[in-house]
Structures are given as C-alpha cells and as structure tokens.
Amino acid sequence: MGALGGGSLKLFGRRAFIRMASGATLSFLLPYPAIGARTDRSSGRSRSLLTIWLEGGPSQLESWDPHPGMLGLPRDFAIKTRTPELLISRFYPQTADVIDSLTLIRSLVSREGDHERASYYLKTGYRMDPTLIHPALGARLAHEIPDLNLEIPPFISIGEWIWPARGGFLGARYDAFRVVDSRHGLDNVTSRATSDRQSRRLENLQIVEKAFSRRHHFAESVTLHEANTQDALTLMSSEQLSAFQVDAEPAAIRNSFGPGEFGTGCLLALRLVTAGVRAVEVTLSGFDSHVNNLETQKGLAGTLDPALASLMTELRARDLYDSVVVLVIGEFGRTPQVNALEGRDHWPHGFSCLVGGGGIQEGLVIGSTDPAGESREPEDPIRVNDLHATLLTRFGLDSHQESMTDVGRPMAFSDGTPIDRLLKLR
Image 1: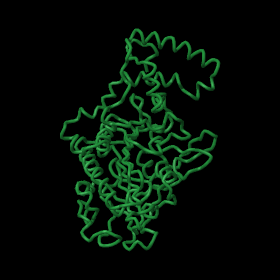
Image 2 (image 1 turned 30 degrees about the vertical axis):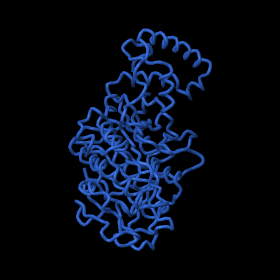
Image 3 (image 1 turned 90 degrees about the vertical axis):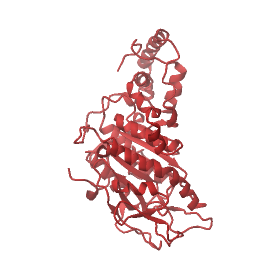
Image 4 (image 1 turned 30 degrees about the horizontal axis):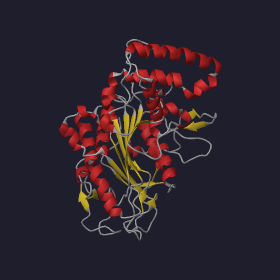
C-alpha cells in the first residue's frame, strides 16, 4: 500500500473523498486476519459467493414451485426443464435451459415472516438478537478468507436495498461496499487536482491526522479516517478498477443479460468474481406482491430470467462454474392462497431457493410443498441456518468454529448443520 503523499498515486480532492467515504466504508484494504484464511479450489482459484437477492419475498408458486391447475394457477402454467421431471413456471423459459446447473430447494423453512427480521435471518443465518449484530455471510467469507492481492472491496452489494448486508460484530470494514448504478462504474475515483497540489494537501492532512491520533486515539480508532484515506488512494490507483467497467464486455454479452440495471448488475457481479472479489450480492426489488401478484411476479421474472440464464451460461464459458457459488434467494415466499386483492401474503413455511456452482451438487430437487396449500409443513424441510452451514463448509470453513464478538461473547460461525447431499465429493 502506498504511503500518503506518494508521487506514484493518482490523488483526489477532499470533497470527492468525502462523497466516496459516505457511500461505503473504505477500510476493506486494511490487513485482514490470517486466522482461518484458506483457498479451496482444485483450479487454484479461491471460491466466491454470488448472491441474487430477491427483495420482498418472491412467490415460489410463480417461479420454482408451481402447482399448475391449483392455488390460482392455470393448468398450462408449468414448463419442462433440463433437469429430468422438474417443472418450473412458464415465466422462466431461459432459466429452464440452465437450471440443471443448480439445485432447487423447495422446502426452506423459517420462523420469520417480517421483512426486516427475515432479511436479517436469510443474510446472516441467525435470528435478530438485541445484544449484537451478526455478520452477513458475505462479510464472514471476506473476513475468514482474505485475498491480500485484492485492492478492490472483498464484499460488494449492487443495486438498491432496504436492509443492507453488514459486517456486524466483525466491524464496519466488512460492510458490503455499495454500488448503486452498475452501468457507470464507480464515481469520484479520478483526481480533480494536479498530483503536486494534492500531494501537498495530503502531506498537511497527515500532520493533522497524527496530532489528532495522539490526542484522541480512541476516536481515531473508531472513525478509521486515516486508514480510509489510505485505502481510497490505493483503490484509485488500482488496475483492478477495470472490473467495474461493464462496457468492456461485447455488446452481445451485455444484451443477453437483459435491459435495465439488474441485468447490468449481474454482469458486473460476474466481472467482480472474475477479479477475485469474495462475495457479491445483486438485488432485484419489488417482489412484495400483496396486490396483483400474478402480474407483479411475471414482470419481475422478465427481468430475472435472462440475467440468471446468461449468468450461468457465462460462468461455464469463462471456466468459473466450479469456483463461484450462486445463490438465488429472498427473505421468504408467498402464501398458497390468493387474497381478496389477487395478491399473495408472506409465507416462511416452505419456500424456494436455487443454489449451485462452486462445488455444490447440481441437478437436485430437495423437498416439496402441499399442492393443495393446506399444510404449512413441507416434506424434507431445510432450515435456513443449515443452508448457511453448508455454504460455509463448501468454502472450507468449520461452521462450528467460534469467533469473539465485540462484547467478548464467543459466537459460532453458524448454529446449523451442513447438508451433506449438497456437497460434492472432492
């Protein structure tokens, strides 16, 4: 990492830094703990997690678990897929051609039916606790499996969200780095001042920072202002910033992901995991369909379907399938019964997700739900914390290993049990 005032760095203005720092903590470039660091790929590439977060609670019935002819769905609603005997919603024709690269879990169960609490649970593997904030799965992976050659954030969130993925008791440096608009790269990473002028500014700032640190050491350790400045300088001078330039992709590839911000975000996520980013989350919002559920889910499927299909296709084409775990999930599902407003309400009692790649067993269909919608209990229920334990295991981590919270309380990485059938034998 270059020192402050180094002539080889591309320097930037104070206002630009403030704008940049306000959007995300930049201390991702501080030294990471060596404990628990490991790589786990036969190809020599360290695994990455790419999560497609379907905010609002997608309907399993209009996506991966249709019951045609029942529960408000027409008889011709389901279509065949490349996975034998698996039918999914006709809203996902392109995904039907690649779903054999993924495993479908139809029986996720949760006790959280509130958006905020359920989002927290799905992202951390723990239910809310008033005494601490648990780290999101991506933050945990970034913390435990550092890449010292990475000069861009190890955990990145793309798109708009309500409840962000946090570093929790691991610290703010592990909060997801936010990219709101994936179509224009990162803002404020080019200097507006000459190198000489900015060098003088930073030399003066360094004097002030050292004086402040001597007098207010605790405040400096909390704000990490000096570290953030150094991190921003390193980021701005890094060749790895090219990973954010989606326009570098051929037009045919860009178009295959579909129009709009979400498709571009999935393509950006592909470029980021190619560059070695440990965890990327791409959000597609709008699934909270209490009113006019069928048309809402259909419209969102038109956005998700081409992006997901192209993502899986490109992972194969770029030889990344075995090194990137893909997770497609939301905070819960929707009720089997349609309400008076032609909507579906919250349903945590048997909902769906897709997971595959990165050493996860593909082509499985796990669990089933009652086609009549009368039972809350799915067959072969899968707990959210067990899914988290499985993913941690796939990354070479012991899900029962403990880390110390910021209040001195030991906390296991997960309180779930790995699902052996999801783990490919090495």
